[in-house]
Amino acid sequence: MPKAKSIYKIEELLMLAHDVRINDLAKSIELAEEALQLSRKENLIALVAKCLSQLSLYCMITGKIEKSTSYSNEALIYYESLGDEMGVANVKYTIAGVHYKTNNYHLGLIYFVDALKIFKKYDDYFNQSRAEKSIGTIYEYIGDEVNAYSFYKRAVRNAKLINDKNLESNVYNNLSGLLLKAKRYKFAMDLIERSIAFKIESNDVRGSAFAYYGKGKVYLKL
Image 1 (tube, rainbow, N blue to C red):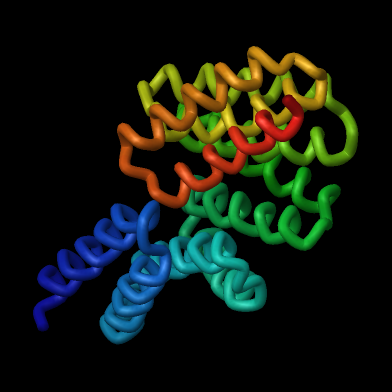
Image 2: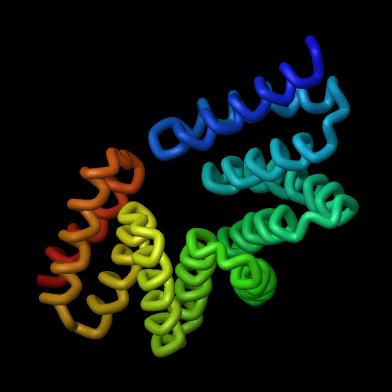
């Protein structure tokens, strides 16, 4: 296969993997693994790094911690050697997620903040919002609800800047839970209802499940 054709095929596989992630993460992993094999075969280092980065994220989300760590460590080596700061930031975001999922909140916070600095440098509002939501979650878990609220609000602001309702609704789930703790039940319900509406609009099946779960928590308190 000519190299240009291979590059097109790999990019196509990675784009499809990204598109189906909200409904079928297993398919995303399958597509990204196929792209990785082709990238390695053609010795396309930048694309190998991109495949590894996406795979590490999908594996982190599905709880495959060892695989995610292996993929992200390898991707980080490639991105640093290529001088690709955004690549480094994306991998650090995933590594932070692994630490967060394994209750290493301090390390998770360090990696999220490192990633956020780079996202800000390149005016990447999408990833700024994701990182700020995650930082807010860590602050909430360690009991700092003031900082948690502040980062959630920043995450909503950045999602609105790029008109990404799906991203915005993800933050509303967390904000609703925080308001629930503060016994601000009406506001908690309003936000989770908005989140559900956005999830239905974007056809985010997995996200809808989290939103309905959040609504259940509000009803439980009521």
